[in-house]
Image 1: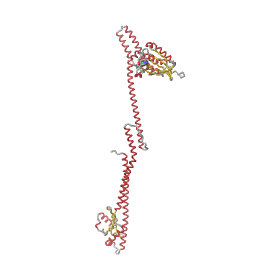
Image 2 (image 1 turned 120 degrees about the horizontal axis):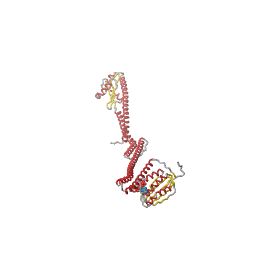
Image 3 (image 1 turned 120 degrees about the vertical axis):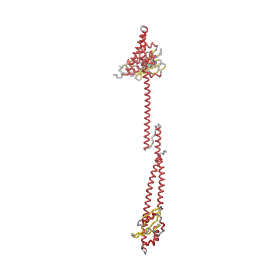
Image 4 (image 1 turned 180 degrees about the horizontal axis):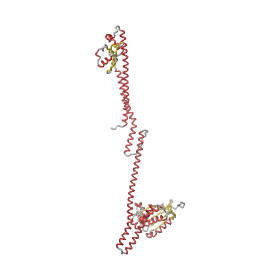
Length: 490
Ligand code: ADP
């Protein structure tokens, strides 16, 4: 059975007070007993003296002054007088222990006989039996004992007083126990309610609800509740941190698996891009071995092997450039570059290609200058313009414009080409990525143009971004830091 802490405390306090009352009552009752005994002894010592004085006086008044014969003749009368003086019932014994004034049968118990034997030996003695006291004192004339006087005294009043006090203590004890229990119960109730609330808080924390309040108390319970609040906040924070760590870990795992996938794709792309021209070259060599005299084959093989070799060479060249840009910090000789002129130069170098595909070119160029390495800038422009031609539709359009904004020269190249599918736009700057491998290959591309252009732009403090792409076409934006004439140059 579970007993509440407030009941336990209350019972303990009430029992403690009850014990105090009990010990107090023992001491008081013992004191009363002692006091009553002393009073009785004093009273009867006085009575004994009176009895002896009166005995001597009576004998002196007699003509026959022999004490031994006096008791036999006048003992009864004397005892009667003594009863009147003392107000107590008196039994008179002669020196032989024989009762002088009353019937012998009143000596009932052995204890009285023993006490009498003691008193006959010239000593005072008394005996208590139930609520009666028998006080026996020698009767003397001078030093000679002639008999014994026994006073019979009722102790009923003393006992009644003693029992009354005892009863009083029982009432007080019961009252103190009940009252202290009730008061203690209410007093401990406030402590217990604090502890109960703390218990409920701990239960809530165990169930995972960490938001807790502090009890508004300025004692140990208040401090404990504050401690629990701080502790639960700490747990909450630790769990939050753990969750965040877990989230980060999950993200890292996702990223790693994505990277792993990308790496596999990349290796697949590289392998394919290098294997295709090599396979083609090998095939022609095998054919030439089989038909060494076929002149037509010889001619076709020469053209194809030449173009595949060129393709391989360009690819290796671009990969090496990319690797070098990735690994080393090159010192580029930056200069003031006329953007309008640079764009015009690139466009005229691509004129043949534009004409070949019947693509119309529109420009909206304004005077602008950037501070960059001229060759780098040309590579960037060539790659983007070349893509705008390669991935355009037959008799499509290309629109090129430039602008100056926030210290940056912006060049936008818009085409009316095939567009890039939304789900792969984030991949187009990866090396060897092509949306349609055959189309890229047909146009001599291997998925290296954009990645290389991006790297070159970045070496010049610039950037390339895909602005928009859909079935109507694609818009790329190049930005380079504008030339500032006031800037101090190294
Ligand atoms: P590539 O050298 O094969 O042209 P790039 O790195 O230049 O490769 O471009 C990567 C891919 O992005 C291309 O395979 C092509 O599918 C797509 N792409 C680039 N520019 C355009 C564009 N202007 N219009 C449509 N697709 C484009």
